[in-house]
Image (cartoon, rainbow, N blue to C red; front, top):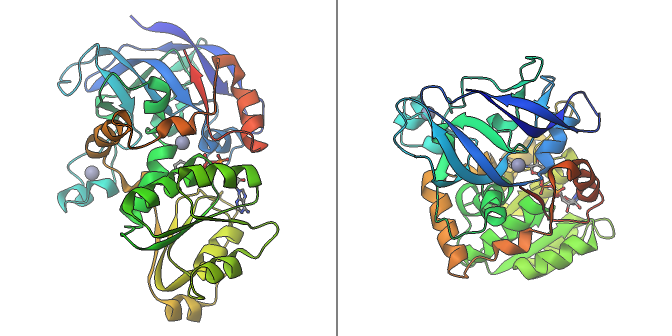
Length: 361
Ligand SMILES: NC(=O)c1ccc[n+]([C@@H]2O[C@H](COP(=O)([O-])OP(=O)(O)OC[C@H]3O[C@@H](n4cnc5c(N)ncnc54)[C@H](O)[C@@H]3O)[C@@H](O)[C@H]2O)c1
Ligand SMILES: [Zn+2]
Ligand SMILES: [Zn+2]
């Protein structure tokens, strides 16, 4: 029996989101229905609302979520009803050439539920990142459910499902920050803030937080930044170079994802350093760089999909660190809100008032 639940839907480009009744089908083979307990508001949800990701409206938003498995379809053995899970948006296939080469975090064929959730009139919804968790219940591929210690708070655990994992992984996995490295992070919202924390966890000696908002820089200090730069008032590249003995940082993470910040990241790194792009650009953005500089500065220009994480490896480990008091993930939860307050939460995110608003059910 399909079920009707309340959910947040973006019906059209740049339109305020609405709370609607949606229809969640029973799980098909390999699928699971999850009762959502908490779901964070991520900038990517806003990108969807603005039509910046695709035109496949209506979108069912929300994707940084934790909850309890309610039902599973045929052939599901990795999770069972009652399991506390974090939802992930890259359920690796195990079969594609990336998976077969032992690099499953690059999986080229990640799984989502095949059955579609719909509006009451039958219109198919596009679930944000194949999750759609600003909903009392959602349907996902069972591989998108990663079981973790149920003593973790859902509001905190859910954040590992996207932004916080992307930011931590941009530093730990993609940037491969090493003990003693210098790291600069441009844009210190939920994602960049987590990169600062990741650099700290890895033992970076110098962690420079760059943002245009002093409030974010203040939070970044609490997350482990050793220096801060307001790039509205100062030249980001000059400032990072000055703070690194004139060289630039070993790893620079762009957690904004616009041409201006990418260019800053490119020039703020040391020769042979690494740039990590974890912020997501929109389709019209273009980048122009002297090709000779790309060659001459050497090093690596990388993008970070989901922090190159492996949910089954990384989520339980990070939840463990959090429960031991070694990773202050609570710091990312600025406020908890109700399902009908997502639009206001977008306003607060855009005004820079929050690191994360989290919808709790
Ligand atoms: N790669 C991934 O897997 C992944 C996952 C989640 C989110 N993202 C993307 O990461 C980006 C950040 O997401 P978020 O949730 O942290 O957003 P956010 O709105 O919480 O944070 C953005 C931060 O960037 C700062 N900023 C904006 N313009 C800037 C500029 N020109 N220079 C310096 N700082 C600037 C803002 O003040 C803010 O602190 C988004 O593009 C989002 O879509 C990527
Ligand atoms: Zn694969
Ligand atoms: Zn996200």
